[in-house]
Length: 368
Length: 129
Image 1: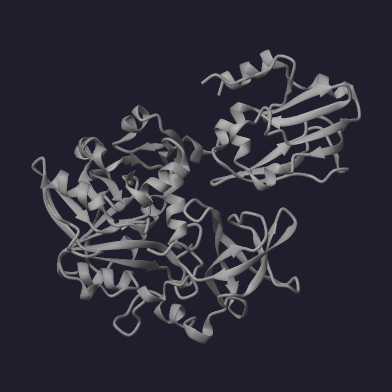
Image 2 (image 1 turned 90 degrees about the vertical axis):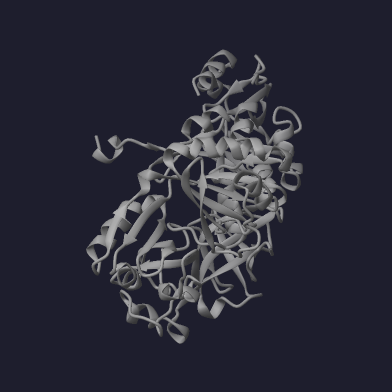
C-alpha cells in the first residue's frame, strides 16, 4: 500500500457541526470538508442575496515574529509589506527560485516590523512552512495552524450579523483591514477579507471556540436568512469573481504577470526571491495571459480542456470552468496566447472532441 | 428518501434505467442518480441513427460541479432522442423516470439484458451507498 494513502484525513473543529447539518462530506486538500449542505445553487444564491457561513478552518496560519520578521517576509513575498500598518492585511504571493509560485497568501500586520500572521492554502501549508524556514532571514517563524479555526461570513447581510455577534461595526473600516477583539474572553481576529466578492469577513478564532462561534452565527443569523455554505458554492462564487485558486489558475510554474497578478508584484520597492525572472515576463515578455471567457455555443468548460484558434492552432488551456449560478450560463477562466487574449476575441474550447466557440470577456463575470 | 425503482425495469451499475418494450429500450437515469448529481445544467445526447454499445458512454450530463457519463444498457441503434432535455436540462431533475427519459434504442440482442440488474439487486446497490 502507498504510504500516502495511510495518512489520516484531518478534521476541522466544526466536523461534528457539519454532520449535524447533514452536510455531504468530501476529502479536500487532506481534510474532510463539507462540499454542500443543501443544494449548491441555493447556497450560492444565498451568499449573493443574504449571508453565508463557510468553514475555512483548513487554511493554514503561520506567524512571523521578531526584529527580522519584516525583512524575512519582504524577501519571501512579492507585495510590499513595509506599507502595512497594524490592522491592515495584504494579498501577496510566495515565489520560488524559478519564478513560479509556491502559494498565494494573505499577510496580516499585527504589529509593524514585529508581528505578522500569514494565511496560506490548506493543501500547501506544510510546503509553505518548509519553504519559509529554508529561505528565512532571521524571523521567528511558527506554524500556528492547529491553534486556529476560521469562519468566513460573506454576503450583503454579513456586517449586520457580525455586529449582532461581536457588538462591533466592521462595515466602515474598508476591505483588507482587521480588528483584534475579545470573544468569550479570547482574542479573535475579524478581517474584512473574503473569497466571494461579497461584503463580509473572515474570522480567526481559537480552535476550542470555533464551534461556539459557528453556532452563535447560525442562531443569530436566522433573521438574516443565514445558511452554511459548502466548498462547491465557494468555488462557483470565486470563479464568478475570477479569483485565482492554487492548483487551477496558479501553481509552481505560473508567472505572476501572466496570471494577471502583476498588481501584487512590487519590483521597484524591494528585493525578493526570483525577482528578475518574474519581472522578465512583465509587458512584452509575457507569452500568455489569464483571461475570462463565455461560450458562444452550448457546452461547459472544465479545467484541463484545451483552447484552439480558428485555424486549429493550440493556443491555451482552461484553468477553471463551471455553470455560473448567478448568470445562469457557462463561464471559464484560462490561459490564452497573448495575441489571442484581447476582449472580444473568438476561439474554440475542445469539449469531448468537439470544438465549441467561445469569446474572451471582461472580468469579473459578476460585477459587484 | 424513497426512490421509485419499478420492478419491471432493468438497471445498470452506473444508475441508468432501461424499460424494455419488445426490441425497443427506453433509457434514463434513476432517481438515485438524479439526487446524487444535483442540478443538471447541460445534457449531451447522441443523434438518431447512432450506434451504441452496452456499457459504453453515449452522452453526458453536467451539474454545476461535475461531468458524468451516460452508459448504454444495451447495444443497438438510437431511434429517438429526448431533445427537449437539451433546452431544459433541469427537467431531468424534476422527472428522471418519465419526462426526463434520454433515448430510445432498438436493441441488437435481448441476450444482453441478462447482464443488467433487476430491481431487488439495484435497490441493494444503492442501499450500500
